Image (tube, rainbow, N blue to C red; front, side, top):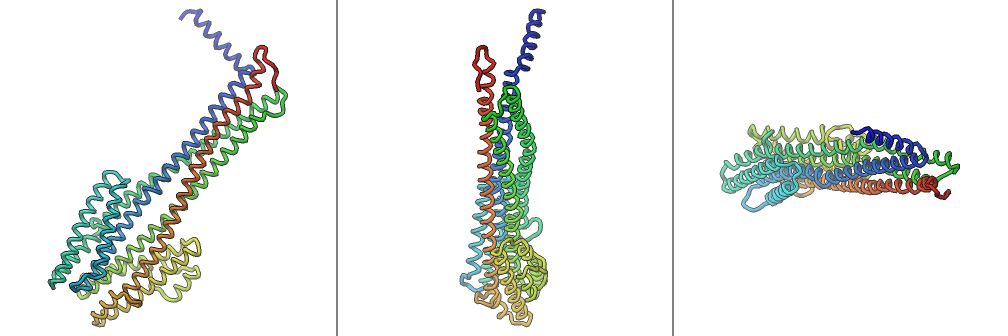
Length: 467
């Protein structure tokens, strides 16, 4: 490179530095810095909010429905097994209500499996698991149907097929329900990933705040500079840009905080309680099924196993026998027992929710009281009376009491599901509106250029002095 060229470049750089130290140069530099900071603020704020909204929509419309779908499949299959036991206990050659319920439960579980296959958020691994579960359900149906046919033909081996079906359904680790629960856990991992994404977008608020403060400083400095250099008290456009920044930054912070609060409430309260109640419903199905299986195999080792399973399941719902005093104290807000029903009573956040939970507790107590009467009849040798009481659908009989428990659990679930949906929709709307508000930060660029342009023009050769 020649000395002349090098010298020319150095002269150009020096001239550029001199221009930057002039008043017009400073104003132009401030305009560029404010524009860059405004664009950065818009990109960070709107980008984080849009990412959060997309994640929240995914949680609401895909991830949580997939998890709850697995929970529903678990419940319907548990109810199918309960209905199969009741149908076998009823016997006879005619189609019974338990058989119709079995068919309805299997159909409901199959529909949920189909929906899960179509909207699977878990990838190839989840697809393979769904196929395995569907194949096992078909095998289970064949075992139950074989047990029913053998029973109607009077072949004692029917109970073997019924127990094989129950074992296939409930076997720890490899049973149908265990595999459904494992798939639900896989989907829950997707929810954890979505929550990590939301935490990352929340951390971006710190960067957003730093950029907003820097931009505020950049907007305040030229106003002081213009007032000092041009002896003007205020610049309306720069003041408007500053006010707009305060409005946008405040709206962004408040909107993000409100949306985060809504998502936390939806997940930690409504969603968690819906899962809790679906689990309680499945346990109630299992307990009622084990009552019938105990009656069928009462004098065998299998009968003792079914009785132990019933005791374990009911203790998970309420860990001790319910008395009048315990129920009265619970109604007054003092829950002195443990279990899933106790958890729901403690978590109830409104009088309506508490009233619904108390209805579940009261009908559950009637169910347990009726079970005690049925067991007493069976132990006294009145097998026919015990079976009649177990399958009866009149008030004071076990099927009636169980139907009440199932119904009121369903009422609580529907209330909480609606609450979850409304809270998530509210969060989605807040995020969308707040992201749109963030775009207003781009107007700061226009206001700044229009506010500083008259002052820059005053220094043009021959330019008129402007106010």
